[in-house]
Image (tube, rainbow, N blue to C red; front, side, top):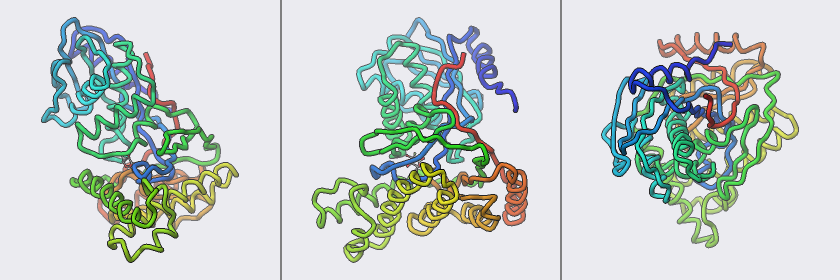
Length: 391
Ligand code: GAF
């Protein structure tokens, strides 16, 4: 296993840039999601986990009110006053400034400036939530440094507001919740309506989770994501005429969507059809996990992909190709596969028999290179604890 040198690298970068030692180092992981995509902002269920790819933060307080940020992976710096945490034209800085601003807006007192260097190995734009990791890690570091009384759930909600107000993505709660609440070897079954959750052991003694990175980054992914959210809201507004008590698609069944198909514009109908089916699928998938039936779980991953691609329209040719390739491999070796995260590019997630992992990676890489003349980056990930201090 390779030694994780990131905490040291970030500490060294801190010393190099700020000329002193950091007070401590925080690790904030990226996340995977086993099933339950685009269900979080519809008050449904999700099944994410924190992974062994993370962003690290080295931080120390200052005596004045200046906040100095250094993005080690970009070799770029930015500074602002703790009294004026305003949106910047540097998009990477907004995730950190957003956390300062939203914590202060919530009444927490950050009474001094600070210096922070950060960076890590969560690939950008791969659907592994590097942005939620940055927000969660920054928030956790500020909480510790200024002894803020911010419970983990509030930290996740603060990170979500930072993403909405400073990055412009009207995301759900899943990504930051997973980065903050992750537990080693367990997936989180989160009910996004009341934010109650339980940890499910995810037995990976015979299987591995393999991510295949399409390398595709859709430039309009954020606006397309926000549009999906609005389409779901439009569906709820129309269905409310028939079911006045509903508040979200969580309160609607697939059968009810079908009953009122004629009242829904076609795009809205298909979005509602996918979301209501997916929410029910997560519940059934958790039952599979409880029974130890990973094969049934894997089949549901393919069904999710089909819905994301055809009804929700957040896939792309490359992701469809990767899932089709995985589906053609022996079912005893590859249990399931689908696009993961918001979509429009990024990674697929597959559950692969341990002995078949090398074969899987080789055959997927070859097929991808033949089809798109591009190298396929693959990651075999493990499930780890959420955000915390590492040194
Ligand atoms: C992105 C969002 F940030 C999440 O909130 C979630 O909606 C996901 O897309 C899709 O499931 O990662």
